[in-house]
Image (cartoon, rainbow over all chains, first blue to last red; front, side, top):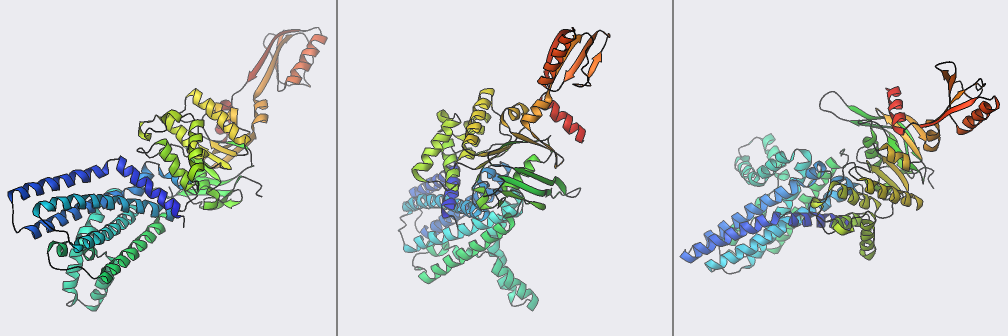
Length: 258
Length: 304
């Protein structure tokens, strides 16, 4: 595996994103969060800390998921359309390294956007006298893992369908999976053995985004931190899931005529 | 050591289509290019040139046959390490500068550190873009982007340059500079294989041309021989002189003045000498040279 090539490709994605001012959108969103928080804080809504923290977490999660999907799903199709892919794949790198580099770049761009939003949100929360807790760091770490999974799924979908379809499906997967898994859990006991098997397979295939969202736990003071082994298990799940989607992406892309 | 820099055996490239069945773009193409040669790959639009180049680069998989680069399977990472490639339409990341663009490609090529930085600057200077290497690609003209493309193809001293429509977008000065640069590259031992519709460029650069149409090889010609064949000499004379052993192409409109055509200069000189010996009069001497374009149109027309 040529890690230098992967690093170089990721660097290209990040530099392009910064120059294209994609991250400016994040900064503007962050500024709006800051502004609205300061207005609310000025008028003094006492006792609303948990609500504000939950809302801030949801807003940050929503916008960073949008950025993850939009960044990852246009990586390869746009390169093919704009013909910028030819000089890349004419180099002595294989297509797996190309996909890995592009995915790594998209993940880093999403993480930068997420951390910028988190920083600005943390600043906004000071207007509500919210104190720092370790669970917030755990929330950030787990959310970053979840965003990496979103990026890998968007990349895979973008190789299977048009950009527009990939973006739509990515949103459905990112925001609809928790509803589907919840519905399956509720209906599991009353389902036939065959349907139960289908539910189990679907449950294994669908990404469990909810596991990465510690927003509610972080919003409520006094719930305490998540044990480290759980964080470790989440990280392992994310790595396995991303590896699997990257392998599927490669299987689709490795013989694709360009 | 491999005998050929580039070789294809019965290469077929087929594209799947949603309607109308598969499209055969390259049909049993067998060609070879020796190390150090400059070979032009010519053909009308849709002849299969770009598809052949894509198969050589591994962008598309051959549906049949094989292609090799210096004995290595075409499209393999090892073979691509030997190639500098310029795509047909040069597009580069719009928000990166030429320096950053070449830095990215250089790293992928395996270059690093001070060597990479020196080579990037050297290549961009060679293609005449030094003054604009810190401007973003989106602000560069088509010709300047083509120069960036040529610079990236030359990164890492490739053994084989595969160039698709190399002179596209370049002005006459740019073309001349490019020609000099390519000849200089060849002198350093690089093999050049390029497609072009600019036949004048091909004429000035190539040792050999390969002509394809509908995915098939129509002709391959050594350019020195071809140029000689495209040349024609004519003498207009009066008087009775026997030249039939030199040429059968003798015509007369008024039975006094004759027009005799010759393939070579030596035949012409011999004919003039005979006319003088027979006390004839040389009225006019004409040297005609058909262009590669005439040859191209005629050959493709014949094949069709």
